[in-house]
Length: 304
Image (cartoon, rainbow, N blue to C red; front, top):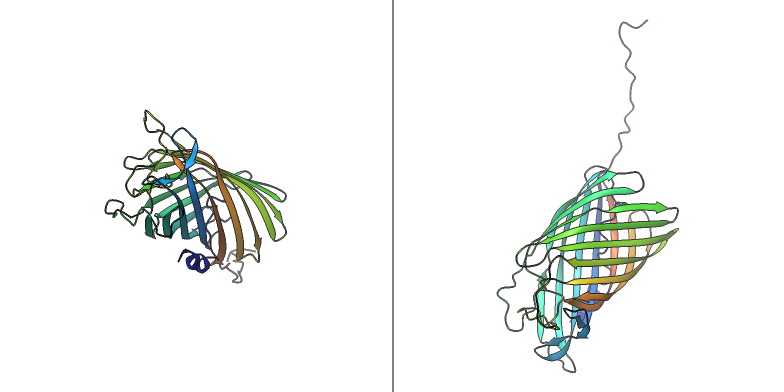
């Protein structure tokens, strides 16, 4: 089933969302995407990479996501944001065909804004996004796998973007306010992209650092939260992770762009150790219509 789902969603993938280069008046940017996350290891609470175990059994996590985002530029400095998606995940025991845990449903959905405070290089903006879970983690069965943390979040970012001829650099520090018993997080994302006519290639980094961590007497190698399947990919109270990746694609026109990416977790604690692959289709729809009416110069009646 996962193979069929991957084929159906192969033309889509949502990725870098903080770019200021897409902010245009009365322009709608739609990004649709497919993402696969695979993990058979955890980063323990002390940073060691260990095998993922579900109920004591070595296992692996496979997660497919179909993600949709929409950015609409109300003006050339203000934009409204929308994020949603559908996620399918399962944890398979090593050497067996029966799933240990499964989950399917809508992922965290959000509304937000982006404001471009400075247009000149480097461009600086502010982005806010309120995410809420359209699912519950309290009524999961013994084999249920949570879609996410099950709590609302508010993301506040300050993206900065600049360009040197064919090279574009972006960095986006921010804070993720996680409600409930989860720790707030410091977010640091950055990317470097080279544009060659219609082809582009870049590298990126994503960092998550929790403000508070669990007070544990011994190292924790498995997530004990019900609905986690033993993985720190969800329901982790204070995860930290650093991911490095590459992204490349082709711009068919000013309206369509297709990109692919790969990323790998290289460091972390109380988080999942795994990799992501995916595809992204970006579509620009321009609603702006310039006023082309002929203007008549007014002449005062008392003019000589």
